[in-house]
Image 1 (spheres, helix red, strand yellow):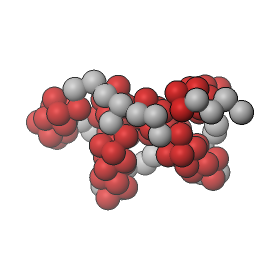
Image 2 (cartoon, one colour):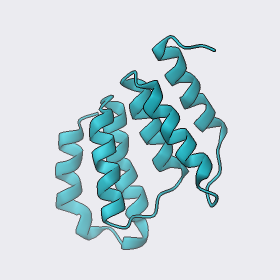
Image 3 (cartoon, helix red, strand yellow):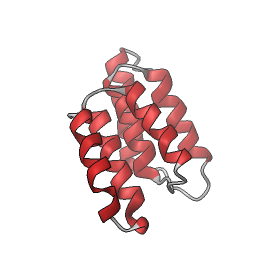
Image 4 (tube, one colour):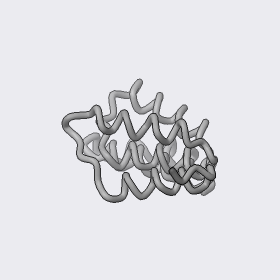
Length: 111
């Protein structure tokens, strides 16, 4: 994931995307951070999503968990999993559990 290129494209094309699609657009950039195993960048982007009042969904939290898992940060992955659990309007999916298990495996914590 080339997060720098994703950010550049985002900034150049955001005005072309209807606001009702903001979540998808922002999540796509978040995916670039996850693919790059850039947990800090993903967290910073999450902050921008909140600042820009973007509606978060379960995929948002999944990408945050994935970024943490790929960077070997089990504690952050667990924190985003718990945040997803606390969002009553969102559902945990099988994918959410798989990402958390992946984070455990990458950290060597299999209990």
